[in-house]
Amino acid sequence: MAITDTELAGMVAQTNTVISAVKEPAGVIGWWSQQHRLSMLADISAVFKIDAEPDSLNAVIGAVNHIGMAKYRIAIRFLKLLHPIQMALINGVVFEGTAKQRTRALGLSYIEVCRAVKLGALDPGEVASDKGLRILKNEFKRQLRTPRPH
Figure 1 (tube, rainbow, N blue to C red):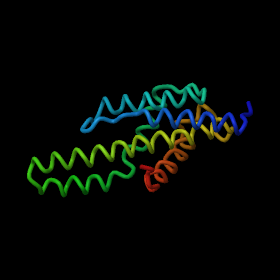
Figure 2: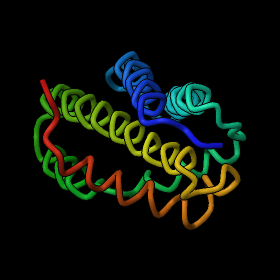
Figure 3: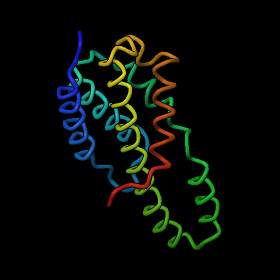
Figure 4: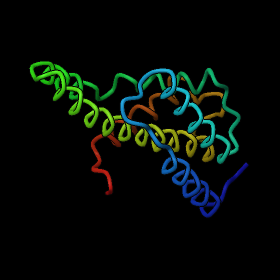
């Protein structure tokens, strides 16, 4: 089914609203954060009218978890040299910024995968395939390098 540029632009605009609504509380890692990202990806899939299975969405999240974390790990190693209270305060700020940036990059990257599905470059069942994840990872890396608007 063909999609017009106007329809696609409307979907992208709507999903940008979904990403903007995501709130990552400071210091929250693990299950809650994973569930929050899953929900965001499910909302984006719904906007694009793509039936995405939870396993596929988990694979999407897992594919980008390790990308770009070297800087964060280096910062944590440096923080261990500081006083525990200073470390906790700085770690909270560093983690909060990192979590927001990565969640935003994940959402924007997944939009590109959904666009590829809508444009016919990717089959809906290929979202979590090597081809779909390659699109996702490339876009995710690009998003991490792109300065964020304030």
